[in-house]
Image 1 (tube, one colour):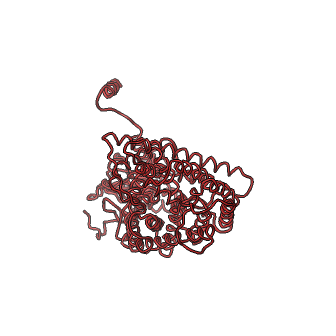
Image 2: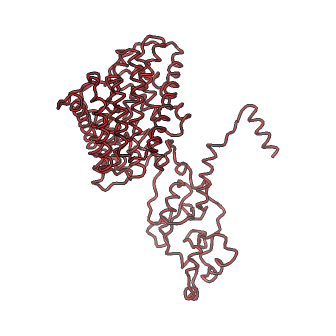
Length: 608
C-alpha cells in the first residue's frame, strides 16, 4: 500500500471519503433526531387533544347550543329543519377557508401529507397547521361523517415540519420529523403507538431505515406517555372475545377479508366517480363543500347516527349493542353521505368511517357465522377494510388489536386484513390515498426494495479489458491519436511504465490543447499527473461508483487494485444501465429447475 504522505501518491478519490460497508447508513445524527422527535411527539399529542376538543366544542355549539367540550352522540339530536341547514353552513365556511386561506386543507389529510413529503421537500406552511384542525372541527362539528385521524396526521405532520424548518436539516430529516408528528397525533387519538409506527412505514416514510424509523417510534412512545393525562388510559374500545373457531375457521376469516376487499374496491371506485362528477360542475370548487353539506343534511335527517365521527357506533358494533335494522341504515346512509361529502373536497379523515363501514358489514356477516358473536366479525371487517383500503395491512392488524386490547384476535385479524389487501391490490391500481395524488400528476410506487447498486460490487460489472494510454506518450502524439479513427472512447486512463494509474485524459481535454501547448512538447503523464480523479476499487459497491460519477461529473470510472494501483477494470454509465436491466430480468424471467418444464428448457438450451 503506498504511503499517502509520499510525493508519489495521489488523491484518486477527488476528496471523497471512501465509505465503510455496513448494514445501514445511519450515523450519530440520529441521536439529534431522537431528541427532536421527543419535542415533536409532545406537540403532536397536544395537537390531537386540541383537535378533539375543538370538534366537541363545535358539535356542542351547533347542535346543543352550549359552550362545552363534553362528548355527545348524534342520537341525542332531534330531527329538525336545522339538521338540513347546519351542514350546508359548515360546508360554506370550509369552502371559504380553503379559497382564501389554503387549498391544502381540502381532503382527508393523508394524501396531502404524502404530497408534502414527495414533492414539497417535507415543508408545510404555518397556515396548514392552523387551518386544517379548525376546518376539520367545523366540518365534523356540523355533522360531517368523518374521523379526526386524517386531520391530526396532517396537523401533527405540520408541527414536525415547522419545527424542523428552524434548523439546518436535509429534506430526509425533515421528512422524519414530519412523520414523527403525524404518528404522535394518531397515537394520541387512538392509543395505538404500534399501528401509528406501522402507518408511518407503510404509507408515509417511503423507506425502511433506522434513521427515520427510530425517531418516529420515539415520537409515538412519547405521545402514548402523554395520553393518560390528555385522554385517559386503556384501549379505546376494550373488548374480549371468547369465540373458539374450528380448525377451518381461518378460512372464514379469509372469506371476511374477501368481502371487505370487495367493499373497499366498490367504495373507492364510487368515491372517484363522484369526484369526477363534481369536476364537471360549472361553479367554483369553493361551493362544492356546501353541496356536500346538502347530502349530509338529508342523510342526517334519515339517520342521525350517520353524522359525526361515530365512535359510539364502533363501540356498539363490537359489543353487539345494536340491531340489524340500525346497522343496515347506518351502513347505507353513512356510506352515501361520506362519498358525496368527501368528493366535494371538504375537510375530514377517512379512518373512522372505514371502521364503521367495515365493521357494519362484518357485523351483518357475523349473524350467519358460527359462535354467535357478530362483534368479532365486526372487528375483522374493521381491520380488513382499513388495511385493504389504505393498502396498509400491518397497520390495520395492529390497530384492531390495540384499540380493543384483545391480543387473541391477532391471527384472525392478520388473515382477514392480508386477504383484503390482496383483493384491493389486484382490483385497483391505486388506493384511495394515492389515486388523489396520481390525479394531480404525481405517480407513487408503494413497493420497497433493496437498491441493487448497494448489493453489487464493482468487480461484478466492470469491463476488464481496458484500453489505456501510456504516460510516456508525447502530447503531439496524444493529440493526433484523439483525432484518428483509433480513438474509439471518449476517455482513456493514463498509466506509467509499471501500468499504474496516474490520471485520465478525455477527447475534450485534447481538443482544448492549443498549438502553443502542443509545441511545448512534454508527455501525457506530465499533462495529467497533477489531476485529482475519482477512482474505484473492485470491492466498492456500484452505488459508491455511481456517487463518484456524480461527484466527478464523469461517465467513466477506472477501477484499480488498492495495493498496486494497477488498472484492473473500467465502469461506464452503460454498465450501470446493464445492471438495471439485469435487475428487471430477475423480476420478469421465469424458469424451472425440476420437473418436465425444466427438462424441456434444458433440452432446448442444448439444441441451441
